[in-house]
Length: 71
Image 1 (cartoon, rainbow, N blue to C red):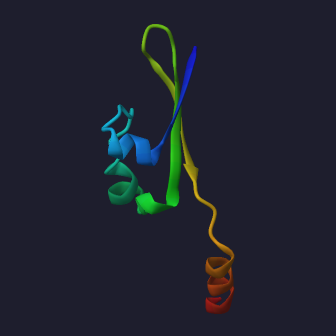
Image 2 (cartoon, rainbow, N blue to C red; image 1 turned 90 degrees about the horizontal axis):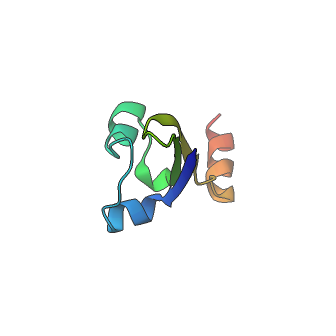
Image 3 (cartoon, rainbow, N blue to C red; image 1 turned 180 degrees about the vertical axis):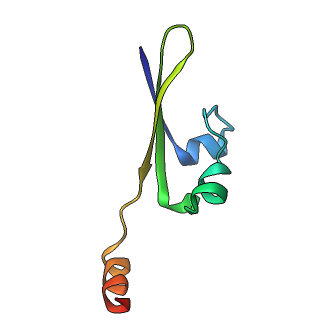
């Protein structure tokens, strides 16, 4: 089984392959691409996709404090 890890900036800048279209993340999941650090996936030798993981950038301390104030 092969594991592939790619930063979102490399996928966008170099138009690299990603098993899910990037527009799915903001349009269907409601997540801004600026919040995504990387995407990884595993595939079998025959090319079947086994899993996909999306890695997020953690919120900055300022963002966390703003969230606490709102609630």
